[in-house]
Image (cartoon, rainbow, N blue to C red; front, top):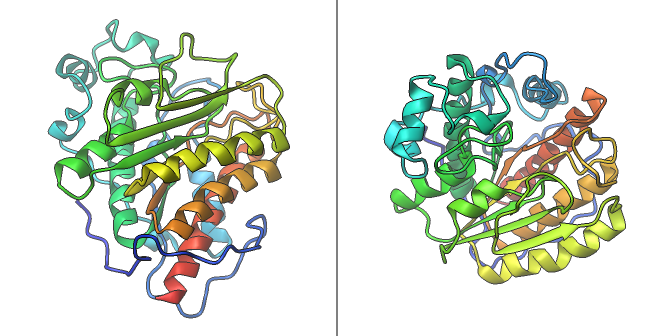
Length: 338
């Protein structure tokens, strides 16, 4: 595991002052900063999937934006490790992993809606390492961003919906196996229900899964999360945020030691695969509700980007960049206090 330099994080139950900033505008780096905020990304995520609605180059574009705006230097970005097979096997079945390792098409890989190539398999395998590394860093520093990940449709025994490996589940299981984590929460705010994640953690009292999604959308049928909030078509900012607050109260009551935030950009009103009507500013308020809530309660948080298929690629990149800024700004604020 990549070692992260130590930095103090708020003690359990510590309260942070609610900030009034807007992360829509870049902020120059602080002159006094004990360590750069943790950002994980690999250029290898940009694999060739052919003509497809999934804009895989968005990850590199988000990283470029963050570097260009002065949030970090390229040298600060952590390269994810390739996890050992045994780490993926803490979530995924042996026969399915054999399909991936051998690049062997089967009924287990067919529902991915993606080609099956060595390059693509390696990108997803690596992304599991990215979320695990970011989650590890969040436990040490309080906040981390994975510019990638969030592949919540992958089940233990098969692929689904552009997802081959469930990086969220792998990160939780690896950290639990290492004895560094017991109770975790997955807050999934993608427009599509996190069905793979819900199924993997079903019945596990140590993992709380929340999914707020468009009900009349993929997947059909849905799985059962600990809390599912299925929204009607066309919900706008105000209606969405009215549902988000009470749902997060359930998460806070659970008392997670780590929160994995699946920050999908696809509730956006101009997303090709979504039917909700959130604005870019509304999505930013969503992000702040989750991340500031974590900071106020001293809950370590790791961000994964999840889905995003806006008609204009630059809209998806802007939404994801704002999410990352929100997390990095909070990380800097906490770092400046220590």
